[in-house]
Image 1 (cartoon, protein in one colour):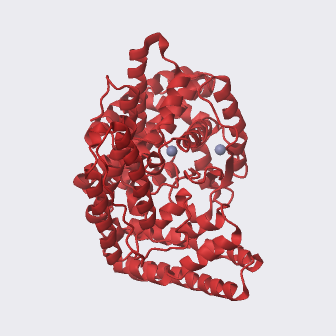
Image 2 (cartoon, rainbow, N blue to C red):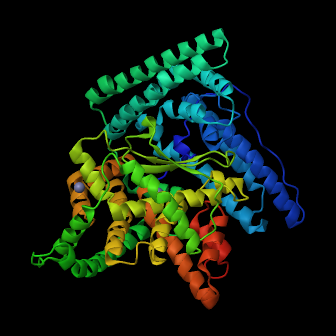
Image 3 (cartoon, helix red, strand yellow):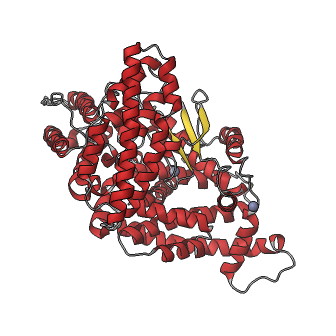
Length: 595
Ligand code: ZN
Ligand code: ZN
């Protein structure tokens, strides 16, 4: 799981902006390839200017703070304005002969084109602005600005103050937009807006009191904070007391047609949704075979004095149960994560897996309240391309406030073995390391329109690569737990497809995750929740991982003895968060053309 500054197009909540349209129209001059690429580079900058103009919240998250004070009201008129702007961008792009651009610019061109198609799809076909009440929450945007260190506090508070003027209109438009929302997203919106309320609590008021704002500015801001609280509480009550009791819900399943299209736009894989689904089913069987072999070897050691069950799945299950009992305490969980970071840094250095940047700090913190409740236990919040000096946060949900049984179930899931794999995935050399590289990429487009499947795929690839390098001692214990872990992303893809494009029920899903995934009850229920709240995202891990592994194999074959793992990793990461199929095109031009 990863929370980025990058929001999917639909999450960039639109609203009415009473400024002149931001036009980036220009004509490329025909000429040499060099001038063509230079023209396109200039055009990319104007494209990004327009992107930020229309998506201020996304801009703030990416570290572009010009529009911090703007809150866009997500009205129908705003949606029309944005659609018209996208149509202008599309027309401008058609004037560039894409085949004549450099390979790097061709990739950027495809990403820009895909963004426009994707934004149209979210607005016109998926229409989640109608059925997802959790799209509306001002807590995150305000917290982002409040916690940012790029400007002095007074300036940030003035931006927040101006932003909050629009809060009543914002939530009014949200109510207008809602039409047969799903029950699941309504419940999510209630939880997340309740969390969002915490942003407008004593800490913010304290900052205002201590700031250098004038007495009149303070009074205005305090009034707006009070209004925001009332407005958010009223939205929550509206969802609780009107939307939920009315019971007029649509299904959370988007169905096969929307799923296939969303898969193509979100993932940009060389594989179709159905191809990935079939690959995941086959991979599941491979993992099960390996687990059975390793569990049979481990059984006498971990389950002594008990005859081995005849059912090989029961053997796997018994060994995993025994290994899962080794875990941190609820109060020590966040600390256990923190402690592992230096070990991972040293391992990557000692084994020459890639070059790390010691100047970029990773800060392990308890997940902020407004980000909790989506079913993800850990995530990374990274600085955007404009914020390169800002902290990267590793958000870990603390367990000491949870009921004992729930915490125990979670800790068994993130036991001594899998917690290490989690930390590889989220931090080093997974998401955190990849994002440090991505922010160094010369292409701002690739930093901004980053590809989720590449990002998740890299983190999953990193898990296997670390174990292959000997991390964890090459033991049956570690590999068995990796199998189980990798089974999770494999089942994520299967589940996503069967839940969103099929009709899998909660009971069937939980049975699948527990039987073939050997998951704890709490994790299986959480995963079901995520599978109802998101579409395609759960497939991104397995898809990206499979594509990266395939690419590495192809390069190994092509380069033979000359293949160098460190060089492969560094080159792969140097392109930024581009779709793996385009990176493959750049690294392996002859053998693997993207399609
Ligand atoms: Zn992840
Ligand atoms: Zn225990």
